[in-house]
Length: 219
Image 1 (cartoon, rainbow, N blue to C red):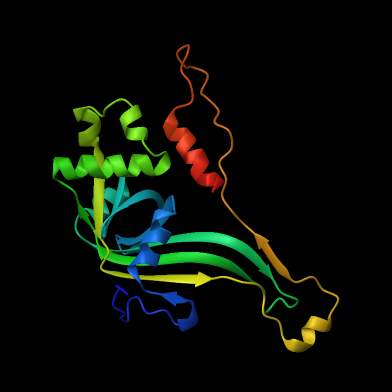
Image 2 (image 1 turned 90 degrees about the vertical axis):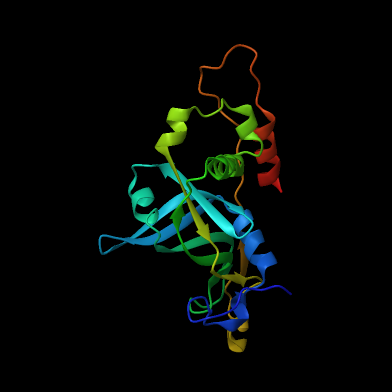
């Protein structure tokens, strides 16, 4: 199976939770909407939650070109990007054995500014469609002023590792005799019915991109 090479950067301490194959890493990234982007700026650690998109072995981030992240990452600096899905609360009979079920990915790579216009538009299309699939084609096209003021950062996936926990609690044998509830409370993210902004042109209906997003969240 095609997998990311392990090194001191991405090796997971608890090996039974570690997954390095690209299929799992990519699927976990593609299922997410928000990534936490860590980098150093002026000798201080910074972590910023951001919407992202993956194209092959590259993650794309976007925001105002004048923003802190764009200025810092555009110079070509190492970054750490994390994505986490909370899938369940694992409640054991003891606090010590209680946990959560989750899927997570940690990516390391060298960030750089995207300067090629075609790549920039492709990245922005993917980021927009991550929110609601097909939204880019439904929305007004970005004008030159908007495009110039938007910074796009590319982060090649140089090192990556996923961590996964599934299943119920694992209690000490003697604790199963205790009158304490044990089990899992499933957790999932669900989108509610869309609410318009009150300024729709007459006759405008909920677009297909939002319907796709609703179907995706419903599973």
